[in-house]
Image 1 (cartoon, rainbow, N blue to C red):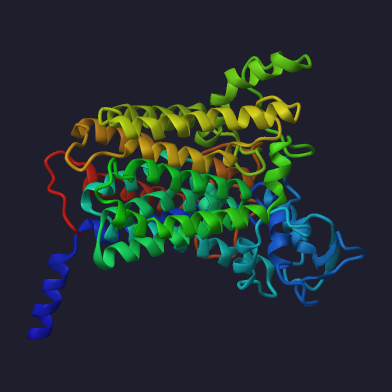
Image 2 (image 1 turned 180 degrees about the vertical axis):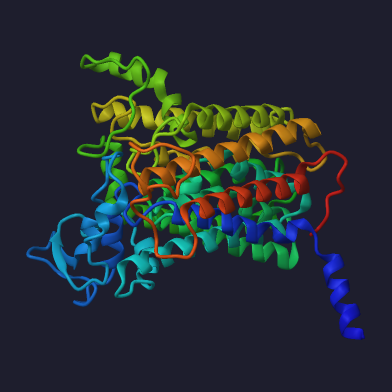
Length: 507
């Protein structure tokens, strides 16, 4: 009898928010299955780098020179469909994913172009089956992300939860969803930069076990960011700097405690800087890229060569087109999976609407950090493009900017503890519906591109499928379940943190 009563008591205590992490995992798993191995940008490079994080002669061996490695052939050949949108992933049918056939490649992190942490961690999941190993790595990335968000939700003061939730709600579709569930190190860059600064802010605003737990999350997030990409290390340091500007005491009062608390941020800056120095990628980028993958050109792009001030002015005026690439204006994957206009218009409209409401909560320090992040988001890509002799649409991809975009959105959504902002119930429902539809369409388009290629049409993804995983769920089933899970996640978390008249709980 007591057991039954206890069970009913637990059920009564359960609320919708307790199921949000599970729904989020399902939504991201749908994206993980929405594309084959090798689908993320430069995946041949990143997968080879993961396998060769340890050169032990089994999964990766020395090549014919110091600049090459011998790796499973599947790592190189899996991108057979890249930049050929009419070609489905069925071109992988003849590939041996068991890793018995090897080939020599020069595409990999053999000279320290990227920090080593991401590849070293993912290497622990390398097995004899390339396809299974890569899928496991995607699942691990999903669990890390959901774990970070769940941990922060539980640890942060309730008034900080909207600042945690909203950037991911309005800033993740479609590029963020695609990358978080991929094998690309940008997954760590996004989640690390997007969560690290807020965890550190919570560390400085709380006390006791919450304080030290949040400090631990901030440390993990910083290592994730700085250990994945050189530019993400810089973004992580920027986030720490923004927190410093937001929290540093005005006068001498409180300096003693703040000085002690500041030891952790200083250590994190040093760690990020050291990882930054291990990456040649960023130094090369600051001098301009060459030989990289280009994407979409801005509407009305100049066809004649631009030099000097003309190139600078063109880039300066068209940088927003680069940002918009994260919201559906550019293609996913190898920039070859185009999105309908409804995706980009819907996501950008939701971002602008919520962002402008959040700007009602403004004070001096917030204004400074928002302007600084916004200026960096504009000036940095202009400099890199112009220095490299490129224009918007060439070399610099939107995903490079996404961690900084999420940081900026988070700073915009920040409120004072005694002064917040709110949207009406109809406004929230409209935002939830718009983002759910945008994700639904983006996921459908991404699955379609690999199941049949874009030369096939129709709503039924199962019809005429040329490629799919060896799993009991069909493309349509994965799409439907993933879309519903995303909508459920967004509805639950928005209702929890921003619903009018709802009492904020400690969950």
